[in-house]
Length: 449
Image (cartoon, rainbow, N blue to C red; front, side):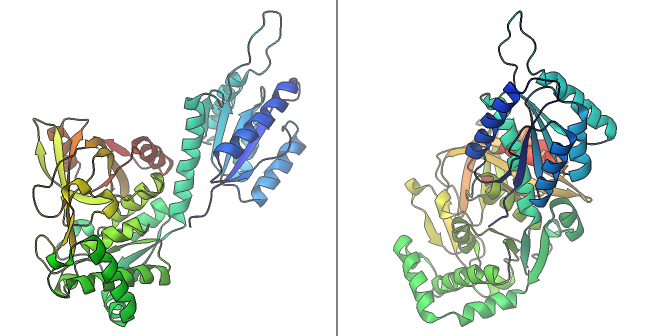
């Protein structure tokens, strides 16, 4: 399980401002955090921070708890000193959050002046050379609360990736230059560690499995899909590979992986397409064709969509009249993505044989399409939106027609002109804005298509 994000939440004011509103905001915003940030570890000082002594004690507390990001809520007007102390002494992201003013009364004083304070503090941090995020609006405003949660969840994903190890099973298929990778750039950009396991180790694991365990999985697969459609021996190879990869990725301490799925695996009659699809529904992400950057994109999509199974795919055709792109791959789509209306089948590899693949149309629904791309050491993220249509497959393998938001010819030409490689990740969820924000936190430029 990824390590949780440790979030500090403080409420502040300058000493000359009345304390009644800040004290009330402290109670309200800490309660909001407990309700809305349950998937994070919260570090919240028990009182409003005003004096240097209170601020320093809160900083010591948050440092002890290894706080990853701090949310500073304006109880009332706050000078530049508190924000500056946090960024200088903690060196973590700071989110300045200014709630709306309480109702005005003509003869009453100004009680908070939070917007002014946030503007001033942000400018001061800019002069000092420190970045920060700013949010304007009370917790009841979905735009404000959503921005805070979005930023924190982006940092949570960034932290999760930085704690992961990626397993490389084999290297890359023959002549696939786009599947080469820059390990230093990956570590620098994402914090991901990488280790390798030879395909021979996987083959040895397959051979060593207990017969009863293999037979049980074969029976489970046969109960769901017709095994008579497979060549002799392919179902057993499928189950052996499924069980071996499931055990190996855990034994080697990998959080996700990528595999060289041909030509060696084909020669052993165990092309892994359908296996990779089943593993995705188990929460195990292994990208195909040795494409490391696509595999990272797939893992990122899973983190941002609460574990939904993505689909690594090729773009093979476009229809300008319908404004659709046709996405297809050999048969690696997770069963949870299959459109049962069109009777999915477990078959041989659709192009070269020698394995198992799902021949199926995929389900309709809103999709986000993404691809991380290493452009001479600088990662970029291509992003698209669309609607997956309820259409049967028109050729062997796994496929879906997607009605795009942008004109499809322009989209396809832009992908080619930007030298984005041919594998894209589809996820049945609208995570476009989440991906865009997470990329920004990792200083990855976004190509919106």
